[in-house]
Image (cartoon, rainbow, N blue to C red; front, top):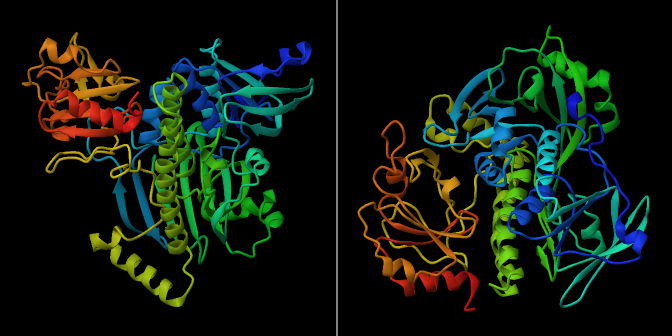
Length: 539
């Protein structure tokens, strides 16, 4: 771990409620100060919602843990104020190479087009991400109360509030809130307190993770091997991280002895076989097994689950942490509307609908990755190896190879909050808005996603459309209009990425930057109102 944060950065203090013998009152209590819980706290604080965040630990994560942060997650982090810091520190990559034995059979580019603020992926150790998020929390002293070294012991709820019994080294007390957000990971104490079980698949395959520090001339790419000569019959993966740290994954047989495999001398032997004559230092070692499971529902009255506490997938494809951040992105604006009494509490049902859909998509892809990497029969092995053999010369075969289908945002098209799209539009309702360079009203270069409202945005990409003052005055006050004139939509290279990606249309965009309705011409107010009421109801 980088020495700059290789210590307990979280201060523990006596809660005032212990001394006063009172109950802590807040709007949201969050359990778990990993990336998901910290991101939720910041998102809610930016929406003027008060949060108490509790976590049993007093320091950042040990080892790199989650390292691959996808473009959509970086866009969310950018909105939360830490995206640029992450990109600056992280290792940016977009090219992946796939090998069979020692032969490269194909490569891919995850972001071949320009005109995007954020890269396809950034590799950055989880301890850095947590550190940046904790620092960002300090910008909201009136909204975020961080309480580390604090354990949740019991939860209870009624129709109006949820109460958590917590303990710390200084004593026990209670926290009462409108909602409790459980972000306490795969071994969630909150989930156990509610007697909720994961359902899904548990695979016997094991992987050994090693963080290795070394000075190597390797490019910033993802390398994946099927059956390499240095690790016969299995798979391996190599990723670069900041500070000359490399993540190496070795597939192990199901009956591998965890204690034996994690012994430093045995890990070093594997790495030396992979990278002979290269000096390195072993930083961190762990073993994991594939899980593709989730709880049945994410909403349990006033207790809400997000991230690994709600769903777990294998690390291949980087769908775990990225999926959890998208949970938060989906949830927080809905909580804001409910707490401000601008929407009914049943808006939370859409969180269940949409994020269960996202979790199931991630679980499906993760399970298919496992089956492709570890065929269960001779027929499956023959099919896999035939595809690998064809991939070097046949592009169609490359699309069928599964070495971890990498995280992409799921579409919400067809879900209950979305208004169906007209035919022949560039985009569909339910999709995440693609970013693009543009200019603001002062002619300054900027990015489209950074210009969207934290509430609802009506994006009009037809620069010739005429918007009368009367039309603007009648628009719902919760909607911000972003009308792109000709000079707004061009970047410094005079390439109109917005027109290429959006065409000339009108888009109603949710606070989480998903498109919720599309019109090919300037819509009438009743159409906009109907689309908005489909989300927040008739209040």
